[in-house]
Length: 317
Image (tube, rainbow, N blue to C red):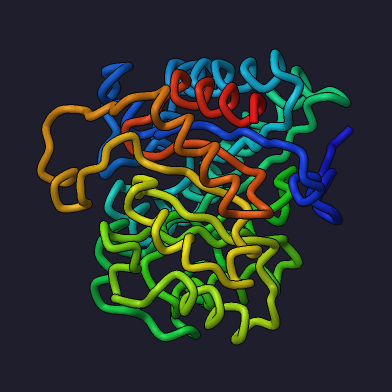
């Protein structure tokens, strides 16, 4: 029996309970597991059983942290690059790409059946990434172009066990609005996660406050919540200290392990894992600044060690 839309009508992470998610999937698989990910596309591992098993092993390491600490978990699919333009670069047909997106959710549904309990509710999220580079907005699409582009992947997720979709590493407002409207059209809850530079602003120069208020204004506050990802806490903590009701719209953080800029990370040939314990303490401080922060995981350079330290620090607080 399918659990289609099990948590789709109401996302349990909105109730205030701590929810973990995974770390930097691509950097972990490349630098720590020695796997090849063309174009940073983790979903490409689903081509064969060995890749499928590698992804299952990757997720299980994190889920067990949540189970052991009796907190919730969000399983984010390995599909950040599984949209049309990137699929074409990787040699996928439209049908093969849709199949890969469905498979990514099927893997997570297997894990949920194994590990979910009343003390560890598990939410399945279909991950969407930017059409362009994750650090550079490049040629910004119109809202309509963004909606049309992302609608295809969202529609596939809407037909699976996914409870929601997450737009990870959004660099500009137009793409975030278009993607939100695509999710609305498919009746899928959506979380919008912006990335920021070392000054706490989007790559377009907009502030987090401006971006969140612009997306809310254009969509009738449609996103279930917002997140920040692919930036170190020191890059945006000062922005959050300025106050404002807009901060209550942020419910998730997936920070980088490294305090390096996007440009420095792009040019780096070695993994900067930072200090897991220090990152945990920084998340604890972020929870004081963000009244609705419940979803915590990592991005580039983070692995299960960082998420475990984040969990320990936040539960202790």
